[in-house]
Length: 403
Ligand SMILES: [Zn+2]
Image (cartoon, rainbow, N blue to C red; front, side, top):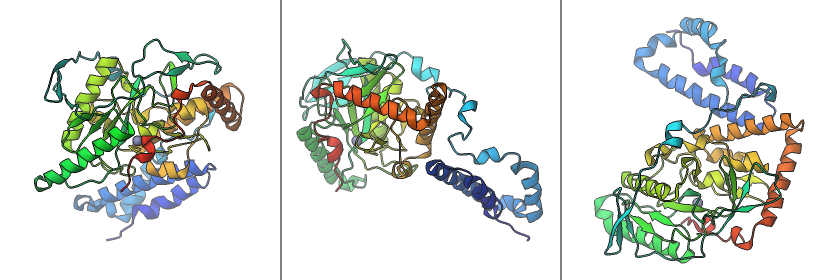
Protein backbone atom coordinates (compact mmCIF):
# COMPACT_ATOMS: atom_id res chain seq x y z
CA UNK A 1 0.00 0.00 0.00
CA UNK A 2 1.18 3.44 -0.89
CA UNK A 3 0.94 4.99 2.58
CA UNK A 4 1.30 8.52 3.75
CA UNK A 5 1.04 10.07 7.21
CA UNK A 6 -1.22 13.07 7.82
CA UNK A 7 1.64 14.73 9.69
CA UNK A 8 3.83 14.59 6.58
CA UNK A 9 1.22 16.52 4.70
CA UNK A 10 0.10 18.95 7.33
CA UNK A 11 3.20 19.82 9.33
CA UNK A 12 4.83 21.97 6.63
CA UNK A 13 1.59 23.92 6.26
CA UNK A 14 1.28 24.38 10.01
CA UNK A 15 4.91 25.46 10.34
CA UNK A 16 4.51 27.96 7.53
CA UNK A 17 1.50 29.49 9.19
CA UNK A 18 3.12 29.49 12.65
CA UNK A 19 6.16 31.33 11.30
CA UNK A 20 3.90 34.25 10.47
CA UNK A 21 2.60 34.62 14.04
CA UNK A 22 4.71 37.09 15.97
CA UNK A 23 3.17 36.82 19.41
CA UNK A 24 4.85 33.81 21.10
CA UNK A 25 1.75 32.98 23.12
CA UNK A 26 -0.45 33.00 20.07
CA UNK A 27 2.11 30.92 18.24
CA UNK A 28 2.16 28.39 21.05
CA UNK A 29 -1.61 28.27 21.12
CA UNK A 30 -1.73 27.75 17.39
CA UNK A 31 0.83 24.94 17.46
CA UNK A 32 -0.85 23.16 20.34
CA UNK A 33 -4.23 23.47 18.72
CA UNK A 34 -2.95 22.24 15.37
CA UNK A 35 -1.09 19.34 16.96
CA UNK A 36 -4.28 18.25 18.68
CA UNK A 37 -6.23 18.38 15.42
CA UNK A 38 -3.59 16.41 13.55
CA UNK A 39 -3.65 13.83 16.35
CA UNK A 40 -7.41 13.53 15.94
CA UNK A 41 -7.01 13.04 12.21
CA UNK A 42 -4.39 10.34 12.83
CA UNK A 43 -6.62 8.55 15.31
CA UNK A 44 -9.48 8.45 12.86
CA UNK A 45 -7.30 7.35 9.96
CA UNK A 46 -5.76 4.63 12.10
CA UNK A 47 -9.05 2.77 12.36
CA UNK A 48 -9.22 -0.35 10.14
CA UNK A 49 -12.34 0.72 8.34
CA UNK A 50 -10.58 3.81 7.10
CA UNK A 51 -7.80 1.85 5.36
CA UNK A 52 -8.77 3.50 2.09
CA UNK A 53 -8.01 6.93 3.52
CA UNK A 54 -4.39 5.88 4.02
CA UNK A 55 -3.90 5.65 0.32
CA UNK A 56 -1.55 8.32 -1.01
CA UNK A 57 -3.53 9.10 -4.13
CA UNK A 58 -6.74 9.52 -2.21
CA UNK A 59 -5.00 11.71 0.32
CA UNK A 60 -3.66 13.98 -2.37
CA UNK A 61 -7.10 14.24 -3.87
CA UNK A 62 -8.64 15.03 -0.49
CA UNK A 63 -5.86 17.48 0.24
CA UNK A 64 -6.37 19.53 -2.88
CA UNK A 65 -10.12 19.29 -2.86
CA UNK A 66 -10.81 20.02 0.77
CA UNK A 67 -7.94 20.84 3.06
CA UNK A 68 -6.38 23.74 1.26
CA UNK A 69 -9.54 25.84 1.14
CA UNK A 70 -10.55 24.82 4.66
CA UNK A 71 -7.39 25.57 6.56
CA UNK A 72 -9.56 27.53 8.94
CA UNK A 73 -9.86 24.22 10.76
CA UNK A 74 -6.35 24.73 12.00
CA UNK A 75 -6.80 28.18 13.34
CA UNK A 76 -6.26 28.52 17.07
CA UNK A 77 -9.03 29.24 19.54
CA UNK A 78 -8.24 32.95 19.32
CA UNK A 79 -9.06 34.52 16.00
CA UNK A 80 -5.97 36.00 14.43
CA UNK A 81 -8.01 38.55 12.53
CA UNK A 82 -6.94 42.14 13.01
CA UNK A 83 -9.01 44.34 15.26
CA UNK A 84 -10.70 45.91 12.25
CA UNK A 85 -12.50 42.64 11.70
CA UNK A 86 -13.53 42.30 15.32
CA UNK A 87 -16.95 40.83 15.83
CA UNK A 88 -18.25 40.97 19.39
CA UNK A 89 -18.30 37.45 20.83
CA UNK A 90 -21.65 35.85 21.43
CA UNK A 91 -22.78 35.86 25.04
CA UNK A 92 -20.80 33.17 26.82
CA UNK A 93 -23.75 32.02 28.87
CA UNK A 94 -26.72 30.36 27.26
CA UNK A 95 -29.95 32.19 27.99
CA UNK A 96 -31.45 29.14 29.59
CA UNK A 97 -28.82 29.27 32.34
CA UNK A 98 -28.80 33.02 32.74
CA UNK A 99 -32.52 33.43 32.91
CA UNK A 100 -33.93 30.26 34.35
CA UNK A 101 -35.45 31.07 37.72
CA UNK A 102 -33.87 29.26 40.63
CA UNK A 103 -36.27 27.14 42.56
CA UNK A 104 -36.58 28.04 46.20
CA UNK A 105 -34.44 25.93 48.50
CA UNK A 106 -35.03 26.00 52.25
CA UNK A 107 -33.75 24.41 55.42
CA UNK A 108 -35.92 21.47 56.41
CA UNK A 109 -34.30 20.51 59.69
CA UNK A 110 -31.11 20.41 61.73
CA UNK A 111 -30.57 17.19 63.58
CA UNK A 112 -27.47 15.54 64.99
CA UNK A 113 -25.14 18.15 63.50
CA UNK A 114 -26.55 17.72 60.00
CA UNK A 115 -28.70 20.20 58.11
CA UNK A 116 -31.16 18.80 55.61
CA UNK A 117 -32.24 21.11 52.81
CA UNK A 118 -35.32 20.87 50.66
CA UNK A 119 -33.37 20.00 47.50
CA UNK A 120 -31.79 16.94 49.11
CA UNK A 121 -28.59 18.65 50.26
CA UNK A 122 -27.08 17.59 53.58
CA UNK A 123 -24.54 19.77 55.35
CA UNK A 124 -22.44 18.59 58.29
CA UNK A 125 -21.95 21.44 60.74
CA UNK A 126 -19.72 19.98 63.45
CA UNK A 127 -16.62 21.80 62.16
CA UNK A 128 -18.36 25.11 61.44
CA UNK A 129 -16.63 28.27 62.57
CA UNK A 130 -16.85 32.02 62.14
CA UNK A 131 -14.59 34.74 60.77
CA UNK A 132 -14.94 38.46 60.20
CA UNK A 133 -18.36 39.47 58.83
CA UNK A 134 -18.58 39.83 55.09
CA UNK A 135 -18.21 43.42 53.94
CA UNK A 136 -16.96 44.51 50.57
CA UNK A 137 -16.69 47.21 47.96
CA UNK A 138 -17.12 46.86 44.23
CA UNK A 139 -16.36 48.99 41.23
CA UNK A 140 -19.21 49.97 38.93
CA UNK A 141 -17.44 49.27 35.65
CA UNK A 142 -19.56 51.81 33.83
CA UNK A 143 -18.13 54.63 35.94
CA UNK A 144 -14.60 56.10 35.95
CA UNK A 145 -12.10 54.03 37.94
CA UNK A 146 -11.94 56.57 40.71
CA UNK A 147 -14.47 55.35 43.22
CA UNK A 148 -15.84 52.20 44.76
CA UNK A 149 -19.33 51.33 45.86
CA UNK A 150 -20.40 49.49 48.97
CA UNK A 151 -23.46 47.51 48.10
CA UNK A 152 -26.26 47.72 50.65
CA UNK A 153 -26.48 43.96 50.65
CA UNK A 154 -23.70 42.06 52.36
CA UNK A 155 -24.61 38.85 50.64
CA UNK A 156 -22.12 36.85 48.68
CA UNK A 157 -21.92 37.82 45.02
CA UNK A 158 -20.46 34.60 43.66
CA UNK A 159 -18.76 31.27 44.26
CA UNK A 160 -15.12 30.32 43.71
CA UNK A 161 -14.43 26.60 43.28
CA UNK A 162 -11.15 25.25 44.63
CA UNK A 163 -9.25 22.00 44.97
CA UNK A 164 -7.76 21.09 48.34
CA UNK A 165 -4.55 19.67 46.81
CA UNK A 166 -4.46 17.24 49.72
CA UNK A 167 -3.39 13.59 49.80
CA UNK A 168 -5.80 11.34 47.92
CA UNK A 169 -6.55 7.70 48.47
CA UNK A 170 -8.23 5.26 46.11
CA UNK A 171 -11.98 5.39 46.53
CA UNK A 172 -12.45 1.72 47.47
CA UNK A 173 -14.39 0.16 50.30
CA UNK A 174 -11.50 -1.38 52.21
CA UNK A 175 -9.90 2.06 52.52
CA UNK A 176 -12.97 3.67 54.09
CA UNK A 177 -11.28 4.41 57.43
CA UNK A 178 -8.30 6.03 55.75
CA UNK A 179 -10.55 8.04 53.42
CA UNK A 180 -12.62 9.30 56.37
CA UNK A 181 -9.49 10.26 58.27
CA UNK A 182 -8.06 12.19 55.31
CA UNK A 183 -11.33 14.00 54.66
CA UNK A 184 -11.94 15.03 58.22
CA UNK A 185 -8.35 16.10 58.94
CA UNK A 186 -8.62 18.25 55.85
CA UNK A 187 -11.78 19.89 57.16
CA UNK A 188 -10.12 20.50 60.52
CA UNK A 189 -7.19 22.13 58.77
CA UNK A 190 -9.55 24.32 56.75
CA UNK A 191 -11.31 25.28 59.96
CA UNK A 192 -8.05 26.36 61.60
CA UNK A 193 -7.15 28.46 58.57
CA UNK A 194 -10.71 29.78 58.10
CA UNK A 195 -10.07 28.65 54.62
CA UNK A 196 -13.27 27.87 52.77
CA UNK A 197 -16.96 28.06 53.39
CA UNK A 198 -17.47 24.48 52.31
CA UNK A 199 -15.36 21.36 51.77
CA UNK A 200 -16.78 18.40 49.85
CA UNK A 201 -14.94 15.20 50.76
CA UNK A 202 -14.45 12.12 48.61
CA UNK A 203 -17.71 10.57 49.82
CA UNK A 204 -19.59 13.69 48.81
CA UNK A 205 -20.06 14.78 52.41
CA UNK A 206 -20.51 18.55 52.56
CA UNK A 207 -18.85 20.19 55.55
CA UNK A 208 -19.54 23.77 56.49
CA UNK A 209 -16.34 25.49 57.56
CA UNK A 210 -16.66 29.30 57.65
CA UNK A 211 -20.17 30.72 58.08
CA UNK A 212 -21.72 31.96 54.84
CA UNK A 213 -22.17 35.41 56.39
CA UNK A 214 -18.40 35.77 56.90
CA UNK A 215 -15.35 36.21 54.72
CA UNK A 216 -12.94 33.29 54.24
CA UNK A 217 -9.24 33.30 53.33
CA UNK A 218 -9.50 31.44 50.07
CA UNK A 219 -8.83 33.52 47.00
CA UNK A 220 -5.73 35.64 47.62
CA UNK A 221 -5.31 38.43 45.14
CA UNK A 222 -8.16 37.92 42.78
CA UNK A 223 -10.52 39.60 40.34
CA UNK A 224 -13.85 38.79 38.75
CA UNK A 225 -16.35 40.93 36.91
CA UNK A 226 -19.94 40.53 35.84
CA UNK A 227 -21.82 42.81 33.47
CA UNK A 228 -22.07 45.61 36.03
CA UNK A 229 -19.58 45.14 38.87
CA UNK A 230 -15.92 44.32 39.17
CA UNK A 231 -14.93 42.48 42.33
CA UNK A 232 -11.40 42.85 43.62
CA UNK A 233 -10.04 40.48 46.30
CA UNK A 234 -12.76 37.88 46.45
CA UNK A 235 -12.18 36.69 50.01
CA UNK A 236 -14.78 39.19 51.06
CA UNK A 237 -17.30 38.94 48.27
CA UNK A 238 -17.34 35.33 47.03
CA UNK A 239 -18.11 32.05 48.77
CA UNK A 240 -15.52 29.27 48.57
CA UNK A 241 -16.41 25.66 47.80
CA UNK A 242 -13.46 23.29 47.80
CA UNK A 243 -13.41 19.76 46.48
CA UNK A 244 -11.13 17.21 48.12
CA UNK A 245 -8.98 16.51 45.10
CA UNK A 246 -5.75 17.41 43.35
CA UNK A 247 -5.36 19.51 40.25
CA UNK A 248 -4.92 17.77 36.94
CA UNK A 249 -3.35 19.79 34.18
CA UNK A 250 -5.15 20.99 31.13
CA UNK A 251 -7.81 18.72 29.77
CA UNK A 252 -6.99 15.69 31.91
CA UNK A 253 -10.12 14.43 33.63
CA UNK A 254 -10.38 15.60 37.22
CA UNK A 255 -10.25 13.19 40.13
CA UNK A 256 -13.69 13.75 41.58
CA UNK A 257 -16.19 11.12 42.58
CA UNK A 258 -19.78 11.08 41.36
CA UNK A 259 -20.78 11.69 44.97
CA UNK A 260 -18.71 14.89 45.00
CA UNK A 261 -20.30 16.10 41.78
CA UNK A 262 -23.80 15.35 43.03
CA UNK A 263 -23.13 17.16 46.31
CA UNK A 264 -21.47 20.07 44.50
CA UNK A 265 -24.52 20.46 42.31
CA UNK A 266 -26.95 20.51 45.26
CA UNK A 267 -24.75 22.89 47.24
CA UNK A 268 -24.28 25.27 44.31
CA UNK A 269 -28.02 25.26 43.69
CA UNK A 270 -28.76 26.05 47.34
CA UNK A 271 -26.22 28.88 47.52
CA UNK A 272 -27.33 30.39 44.23
CA UNK A 273 -30.99 30.28 45.24
CA UNK A 274 -30.32 31.66 48.69
CA UNK A 275 -28.17 34.60 47.59
CA UNK A 276 -29.47 35.06 44.05
CA UNK A 277 -26.03 34.38 42.63
CA UNK A 278 -25.77 34.62 38.84
CA UNK A 279 -24.53 31.48 37.10
CA UNK A 280 -21.80 33.59 35.50
CA UNK A 281 -20.38 34.44 38.92
CA UNK A 282 -19.67 30.78 39.76
CA UNK A 283 -16.06 30.34 38.65
CA UNK A 284 -12.81 28.57 39.48
CA UNK A 285 -9.81 29.81 41.40
CA UNK A 286 -7.62 29.69 38.29
CA UNK A 287 -10.02 32.06 36.54
CA UNK A 288 -9.81 34.72 39.24
CA UNK A 289 -6.30 34.43 40.73
CA UNK A 290 -3.82 37.18 39.85
CA UNK A 291 -0.29 38.17 40.73
CA UNK A 292 -0.15 41.92 41.19
CA UNK A 293 3.64 42.08 41.32
CA UNK A 294 3.96 41.20 37.62
CA UNK A 295 0.38 41.65 36.40
CA UNK A 296 0.06 38.04 35.35
CA UNK A 297 -3.02 35.95 35.98
CA UNK A 298 -3.05 32.41 37.31
CA UNK A 299 -0.98 32.75 40.48
CA UNK A 300 -3.07 29.80 41.61
CA UNK A 301 -4.14 27.32 39.00
CA UNK A 302 -6.62 25.03 40.71
CA UNK A 303 -9.38 24.03 38.30
CA UNK A 304 -7.53 25.66 35.38
CA UNK A 305 -9.07 23.50 32.72
CA UNK A 306 -11.35 20.71 33.77
CA UNK A 307 -13.92 21.87 36.28
CA UNK A 308 -17.16 19.93 35.61
CA UNK A 309 -19.32 23.02 35.14
CA UNK A 310 -22.03 21.21 33.25
CA UNK A 311 -22.32 18.38 35.73
CA UNK A 312 -22.56 20.93 38.54
CA UNK A 313 -25.50 22.55 36.76
CA UNK A 314 -23.71 25.60 35.36
CA UNK A 315 -22.84 26.87 31.89
CA UNK A 316 -19.24 26.40 30.78
CA UNK A 317 -17.95 29.53 32.45
CA UNK A 318 -14.45 28.91 31.08
CA UNK A 319 -15.71 30.61 27.93
CA UNK A 320 -16.27 33.90 29.73
CA UNK A 321 -13.82 36.76 29.29
CA UNK A 322 -11.69 37.37 32.37
CA UNK A 323 -12.17 40.71 34.11
CA UNK A 324 -8.51 40.76 35.09
CA UNK A 325 -7.46 40.77 31.42
CA UNK A 326 -10.24 42.88 30.02
CA UNK A 327 -10.65 45.56 32.69
CA UNK A 328 -7.30 45.77 34.43
CA UNK A 329 -4.64 44.99 31.83
CA UNK A 330 -3.34 41.72 33.28
CA UNK A 331 -1.87 39.19 30.88
CA UNK A 332 -0.71 35.58 31.03
CA UNK A 333 2.43 33.63 30.34
CA UNK A 334 3.28 30.23 28.95
CA UNK A 335 3.30 28.64 32.39
CA UNK A 336 -0.32 29.55 32.92
CA UNK A 337 -1.22 28.67 29.39
CA UNK A 338 0.28 25.19 29.80
CA UNK A 339 -1.78 24.62 32.95
CA UNK A 340 -5.08 25.46 31.29
CA UNK A 341 -7.29 23.31 29.15
CA UNK A 342 -8.79 24.09 25.78
CA UNK A 343 -12.04 25.23 27.38
CA UNK A 344 -10.25 28.07 29.18
CA UNK A 345 -8.67 29.21 25.90
CA UNK A 346 -12.06 30.47 24.79
CA UNK A 347 -12.16 32.85 27.73
CA UNK A 348 -8.58 33.98 27.13
CA UNK A 349 -9.30 34.48 23.44
CA UNK A 350 -12.48 36.48 23.95
CA UNK A 351 -10.71 38.64 26.56
CA UNK A 352 -7.98 39.42 24.03
CA UNK A 353 -10.57 40.24 21.39
CA UNK A 354 -12.23 42.73 23.73
CA UNK A 355 -8.88 44.34 24.52
CA UNK A 356 -8.05 44.68 20.82
CA UNK A 357 -11.44 46.23 20.11
CA UNK A 358 -11.12 48.73 22.94
CA UNK A 359 -7.60 49.71 21.90
CA UNK A 360 -8.83 50.34 18.39
CA UNK A 361 -11.79 52.35 19.58
CA UNK A 362 -9.52 54.55 21.69
CA UNK A 363 -6.81 54.72 19.03
CA UNK A 364 -4.26 53.28 21.43
CA UNK A 365 -1.77 50.48 21.05
CA UNK A 366 -2.57 47.42 23.12
CA UNK A 367 0.44 48.20 25.32
CA UNK A 368 -0.80 51.75 25.94
CA UNK A 369 -4.25 50.51 26.81
CA UNK A 370 -2.85 47.92 29.21
CA UNK A 371 -0.86 50.60 30.98
CA UNK A 372 -4.02 52.65 31.48
CA UNK A 373 -5.97 49.65 32.72
CA UNK A 374 -3.22 48.68 35.16
CA UNK A 375 -3.27 52.18 36.56
CA UNK A 376 -7.01 51.81 37.03
CA UNK A 377 -6.37 48.65 39.00
CA UNK A 378 -3.77 50.35 41.18
CA UNK A 379 -6.08 53.28 41.84
CA UNK A 380 -9.02 51.10 42.80
CA UNK A 381 -6.89 48.79 44.93
CA UNK A 382 -5.63 51.76 46.88
CA UNK A 383 -9.21 52.67 47.69
CA UNK A 384 -10.02 49.29 49.16
CA UNK A 385 -10.27 49.19 52.93
CA UNK A 386 -7.93 46.89 54.82
CA UNK A 387 -10.45 44.09 55.03
CA UNK A 388 -11.09 44.02 51.34
CA UNK A 389 -7.51 43.16 50.55
CA UNK A 390 -5.91 39.85 51.36
CA UNK A 391 -3.87 39.86 54.51
CA UNK A 392 -0.30 40.00 53.25
CA UNK A 393 -1.22 37.28 50.77
CA UNK A 394 -1.45 34.86 53.71
CA UNK A 395 -4.43 32.95 52.51
CA UNK A 396 -5.55 29.41 52.27
CA UNK A 397 -4.68 29.68 48.64
CA UNK A 398 -1.08 29.41 49.77
CA UNK A 399 -1.88 26.61 52.13
CA UNK A 400 -3.79 24.49 49.67
CA UNK A 401 -1.63 21.72 50.76
CA UNK A 402 0.76 19.94 48.48
CA UNK A 403 1.91 16.86 50.33
ZN1 LIG B 1 -7.79 27.56 45.35
